[in-house]
Amino acid sequence: DSGVTQTPKHLITATGQRVTLRCSPRSGDLSVYWYQQSLDQGLQFLIQYYNGEERAKGNILERFSAQQFPDLHSELNLSSLELGDSALYFCASSVQGAPNYGYTFGSGTRLTVV
Amino acid sequence: GIQVEQSPPDLILQEGANSTLRCNFSDSVNNLQWFHQNPWGQLINLFYIPSGTKQNGRLSATTVATERYSLLYISSSQTTDSGVYFCAVARDSWGKLQFGAGTQVVVTP
Image 1 (cartoon, rainbow over the protein chains, first blue to last red):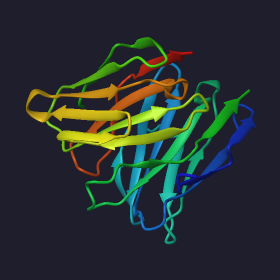
Image 2: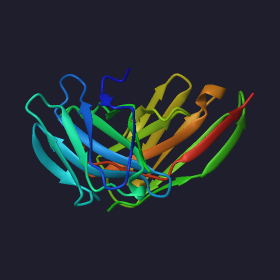
Image 3: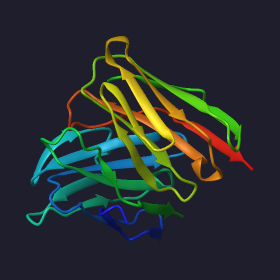
């Protein structure tokens, strides 16, 4: 167990639907990152939050949104789903200000859009 | 953004062999990490190494920041070392990571 918890582990849904992926960071970590891993695009950065505030945005579609709550857990909302959104979605957390520590990834949510 | 190139793309090793994986990056970074993605998809952080050398058991890594490359050494490989090894970099020490395409390693008995 890495300490970063992602739920659900697997999700199968139909095109056009909306889903919410949840991430609880490792205790004490204030930064949360979301990544998408697909076969053709590799690991792509989506968005970063630090202590509830959005800090950086990557190649995140307008149909996708995220937030970090006061208890530091984060949710990634994916709407109007398309077949191409099928991928493994990872959440990672880190201790900002402690540069000797790497990022800890959760086990991911495997999303299949049918 | 920063370009990250990893080589070789694929590596087949016999158990007990040693190997070197390389990561080249296109700009100065303050954050470089190596990850192992096991066959079950889990991403495990191996090293946080923006510069210098670190060792952890049979694995070691060296980053030469001035020449913009990093090397990951696997010694006495085991079948459990199979998987994909990713190098990832960021300009900030805690910024967004840019991942390379990875090196797929297969260790055969």
